[in-house]
Length: 542
Image (cartoon, rainbow, N blue to C red):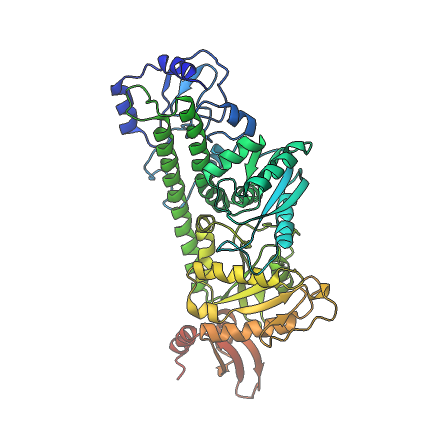
């Protein structure tokens, strides 16, 4: 939009200093609407943006992700955040740790990136780094391209129209490739029919790189961060998943905002102040994004407190907790279903089918009840702030008694996947005792003919075919007893007293034998020290 159009817009925005300061002093994100005058419809009005659209944003489909800030008939300063529903900043109207479902859904739906939804025909570009810190030594460019194709195919109505691997020596450059390779790539993309977006298979593109690539290729440009976030958004079902995705999307929106402002600056309009406010459009939107981020973090903190309460209740009931972790699509959910017999679990052969922590009860060979925690899968080259956004979910792992690391041993990148999972666990500051006691499981051995392992501590299984599960259960039970400090002991109980019933309820009874004429029996139990102390106190056992 040219400077003339911007002046035409601001000419109609009659907002005095007093009104602006009043708005700034009173507003909590989404509390009030302030419609400012009426503007004549112009070509740059567009739902989903606050900043006026440019030719480039119309071409790429990316716009600053706010709600209806320039409707055809009115200029509303507050529509970019929350549609006010009698919001109150005080939480007295809600239970301290309860969050209204409608409030979360509103947060989740307000910042949907434009352009990325719908059908897409993707051209995948993989930069093959020849040397330096960004070179991948545990995998190959072909395998990385295969994973990129898998990410695209996970999304409904997305397809790969073409792909290319190009070498680069300086991936930190804005155009990533050298002049010759970049020119060849640009010609190939522009001559490939039907391309709607280009997926550059790197962790994260800088705002300047994204802008230059979009201008050169004339279509939307995506990186791993935006692709994975879109998969997350499509699979989100629970409150916690939706909030964590909304938080993870904010850095993406900030980069798009910088791109839009850079375009406006080139046209002479990006640094203009909103009349009487002392703030530019960019500063207003940055502040609004920050306020939105604070609101999401506050909601996540309330969910974190609730999750902490649930953990305390599980600990109080003395159920050992086993976190099942691994690379995405390695078979974690299938394994938990095989171990627990939970018919409600429906494993899917796709990336990131599980986004939420779910807990499932199962029994060990000794009849001891344990809780298996199904967690989100990991992926290589994910930015730290994406993992940080899911810290509330992954927090449960640090509080478990045992970690079972599931590996898809049939995958050609299984070694690289193991390294990625262990690196993420270390970054999550998992206690040393848990890292040292991890049980490694080699899953999908049925896909490898004559599979043998030279690692004695590894448990080979096929969760789908239910091979090797008995050995795994015995190994888990042994590790759980050691990790929790439970005691395996034989107790002499009176059968004409409530002792046996109490033990069945509070401990794990393995066997009852040697019933004598004196109405006593020897009962073999697995019991925690705290529970044994309560047993002795209640029944005066010495």
